[in-house]
Amino acid sequence: MINQRTLKNSFSLEGKGLQSGLNIRITFNPAPENYGYKVKRIDIPGHPIIDALAENVYGTDCSTILSMNNIQVSTVEHALAALYACEIDNCLIEVNGSEFPILDGSSIAFVSKIKEVGIQIQNTERKYITFKRKRIKVVDKETGSSMLLLPDDTFSIQSNISFNSFFLKKQEANLNTLSEFTKDIAAARPFVFVSEIEQLLKNKDSKGGDLNNAILIYDKLMEQNKLDQLVDFMGVRRKDANKLGYIMNKPLLYPNEPARHKLLDIVGDIALVGHFIKGKIIANCPGHKINTLFARAIREAMGFDLKAKVSA
Image (cartoon, rainbow, N blue to C red; front, side, top):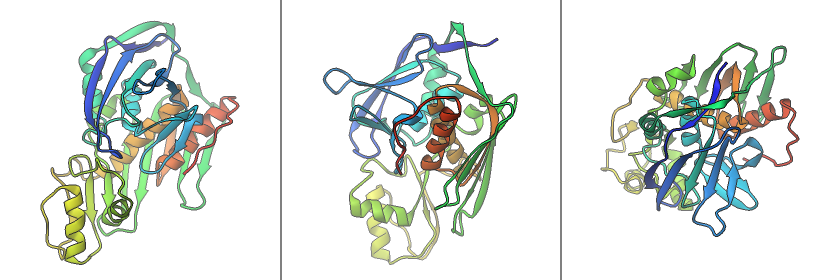
């Protein structure tokens, strides 16, 4: 028997928001049994609370966005991944903005603080979700992405990514148990292609994005002045436009770091199921849209009547 867990003490972190570029303070607090994960917007009168559940996913463009009663919060996945991987059942997250701080783009700062403050064992037994004789599969016909949950006595993830890029064709990452997350997954950073940065620059989005929280993949030649604009936007030294490759402030932590970060995102989005799972997840070309649709499908299989819709 495994009992539910919460934090022993509160902790806070500060950093800029990915979309706004503003300084954000986030605080993680102990919570009672059967509370789950909830987000409190302390910058709004009345301090509204958003349940971190799949039916409250409002959007999945660049990050996972939650919404309840017209109140939103975005970029929740890296923090939720840390809580889930550290096997925290109950936590109240307070944030003074519309998004979580991006920090270095990974989960490692959240994990480190959780381990620093410690875990409190609670009195109520944890309820695991398992489907002994049932597979759950979700497919996005537009992209070919798919997520499959197979019956198993433990929790594991096999994730495969594939892109039409010389530098990032196919990669695989695996998580055999949540205990591997801290060492093998938590520090993996997100990646972005130069073509995506071009669009962000046009839309004036991701004001907090830079090479301290992302890996830039320059895989298609462009004019020098255009590349100069992009690297200036990312706040790094200009480079020769004739030389393709990764652009980053620190070397790759793992040869398959992009695949590991995609797996990190899966853990964060699966946390929106609201329970720990026993089963093997096989992910093909995962992303926030398919991940959250998958979490929603699992909740529907659990018997919840979900009225909210997941949007792209």
